[in-house]
Amino acid sequence: MTSKKYATIRYTALRLGVFVGCLAVLVLILSLRVLPSGFEDPDPLLVVMAALLLSGPLSWVLLRRERGEMSVQIVERVERAKSRLSAAQGEEDAAVDAAKAADTAK
Image 1 (cartoon, rainbow, N blue to C red):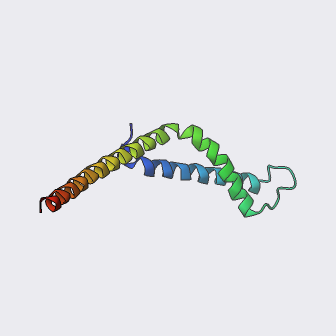
Image 2 (image 1 turned 45 degrees about the horizontal axis):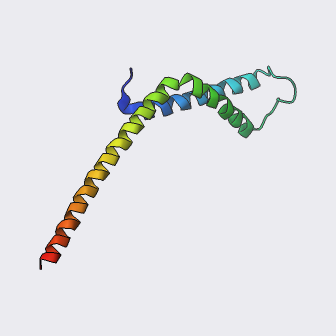
Image 3 (image 1 turned 180 degrees about the horizontal axis):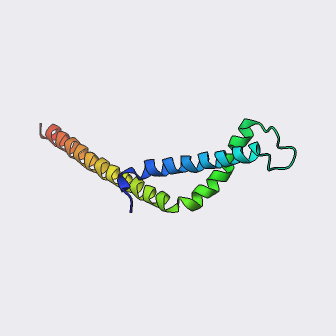
């Protein structure tokens, strides 16, 4: 198991790596002229879009474990934030109740 502390950064870096790999393969295929005629000089934007379309499903399959680790990290952070918010709201409610009690005692 890898460090869960950096799971989001790791997943993002690996996802970027898959995209760059797909882009490199597409550029190599296009430069070697392996594809049939009509693909001699494609628009660079179309090549980038094709790399995005290829890298999405590949990332979904290849990075399943890293995505799971990232989701666990995010859920833990959300739960900690919820508990801190709940504690802060409890303190605030206690302060408001004390102020009301002091006002009614006057």
